[in-house]
Structures are given as C-alpha cells and as structure tokens.
Image 1: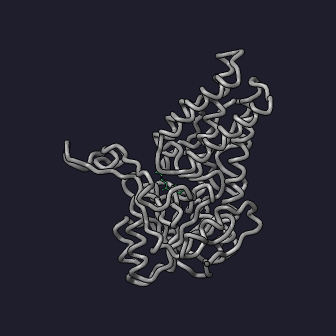
Image 2: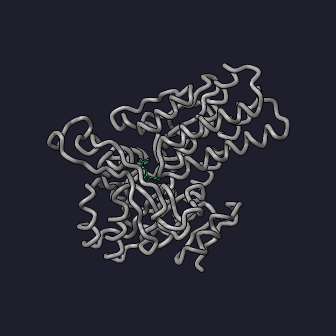
Image 3: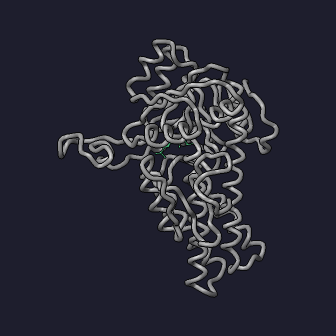
Length: 375
Ligand code: MRU
C-alpha cells in the first residue's frame, strides 16, 4: 500500500495503509464517519490495539491487516529499545505482543489468522539465519503481502458475486462489509460495486445496524459516495420490505465461518437470515478464505464478543435509556448454515451442504481456479 490518501483511484475509501515516510499505519478513524473523514497515524502496536478496540478500524479483514502492521511496529520498537537482543528472546517478546493484539477483539478470526501468519514468518526468518535487526522489515513486507492479498481477494469475490446480481435487482445488506472493512473494495459490497460498475441498475436497502450504526454511518456513506442507489432502513424494517417482495437477495460479510458453514457476523445477521428464509430470498455470505476457521466444527465453538453497555444505552453520545438499566451487548450472532444459500470466497462459491464444499474452497490456494463447489 502506498501513502497517497484515504481514497483509492476508483474513489472508494481506504480503511488503512502503510505510510513509509511516517513509519506508521494510517487509517480512517471510522468512529468519526460520516461527519468527518479524518486520517490518524498509529506508530506503535499500542496505538494499533487501541484503534481496533475502539472501532476506529473495524471489519474482519481490516482488523487482520491492522494487527499484522501492529506486530511489525512491535518488532520495530523491540529492536530499537533492546539492541543486541537475540532471535529467541525477540520471538518470545513478539509472541506476547501478538497475544495482546489478539485479545482486542475475539470473534473475527482474521485477526488471529494474520497474527499467526506473522509469527510463522518471524519464526521461519530467524530459523533461516535472518538478522534480528532486519526482522521488522521482513514483518512489514509480510503485512504488506497480507493487505495486497486481501485487496485481490475482494476483487475476486466482487467478480464472482456480481454474477449473482441481475440488472434491476434490489438487494439488502447489514453492517458494513465494504471498502471500510477491508484493504480492498470490500466483501459483501464487492459484488455490488462490481455489478454497478458493469452498468447493472441496482438498489440497495442498507440496515442501519444498531447499536453502533455501521450501516447508517459507514455503508450508506461509502455506497452513496460511489453512486450506488440506496435506501437506509432501520433493522426492524427488513421484514416489511421482504414481505412486499422488494428484496431479491441479501449480501452480508462474516467474522468467522465454522467448518460446517455456521457464520458469525454482526448482531442481527441471524434474524435477517431467518427473514430471508421465510420469504424465499437468497441469503449470501461473502468472505475471504482467511475468515473460514476449519478448526471450529460449528458455530457453538465461535467466541462472541460482548461490548460495553453504553453502545446500547446511548446513540452517538446521547443517552436513550434509563440510567443503570441492565444491558446485553453481544457484537455478533451466529447464523446456522441451513439458512445460508451460498458462501462466496475469492476461490469459489461453496453451496450446501458445506462440510465438504467449504473445505474444498477454503483450502484452494490459487484464486484463478475459482469454481463453484456444490457437493
Ligand atoms: O464490529 P464490526 O464493525 O467490526 O463488525 C463488522 C462485521 O460484522 C462485518 O460484517 C464483518 O466483519 C465482515 S467485514 C468484511
């Protein structure tokens, strides 16, 4: 990634990028959108961890990329402050830093996946006799590779998913699985952008997505900027519009997909899948292979992040509930695989039953071999 600014050549927002001159990870502070599009610089792993925790950067692929850069920054700080540290000690310190970064958000597997990949690179680099002083550069290069692969995966998912969208379709999406959630053009929004650019006429219902309003604040902002016709609705309006026959398909992203296809995504996704099922509306999950966690047999094994009560009791700083009320705030829910019509990855489209089709797609290495797997 270069250091050119918060919008890509195609005009989409860039959630994050490495600024070599500043030696820092730059990211759009998403807590300020849509009022202000401000870029902040994270020059330490602590700043990256804070940004992830506070949702300045959010969305499963984007937090994976951010954490990867966070670990590279940790290596930089380590080498600067402990000159002469040996490889074993450096690796041990990096493992601790990775543990801290991993703890920032537990549900999106991309975070843990990216950190594991970074640690494996550090391990391999040192085992091959690489110099400890140059370890930060090796890790920066790997973080850059993770970001570049994510951008390529988004584009591939966009091409595959656009095939499922016809001219004149009205679609519905939940939360934000767009450019702001990735290092590229998004996951669930990638097919929408691709179909729109191909000249298909579309209309997208955007769920506002309480409690943190990723739909209203982020998805509505980025789709409208791109010229995609949208209608913002509150989450409880989806059934109404589906019943009236106004929704042709639902596209959502994912934070973690278990081996059987059960999918964790933003709270409210499960309810939406049930509504789609009741109205015979196709329900598509779009996510890169890095979101598939074959080590978890089903959705019951997926950890669900519980966030602070004030996200529920307040809206943008204004209290909307009595003081002291008891609150539940799970940030994600799990949609059972039986309500998912297909899972789109950069390597292909997995169809039910997912036990085999998802594994086949997830274990593919080359995006160019994209296939449709319906076993
Ligand atoms: O809490 P968030 O905003 O990080 O939740 C994001 C989502 O649930 C997205 O749908 C998911 O991460 C997929 S993003 C491509």
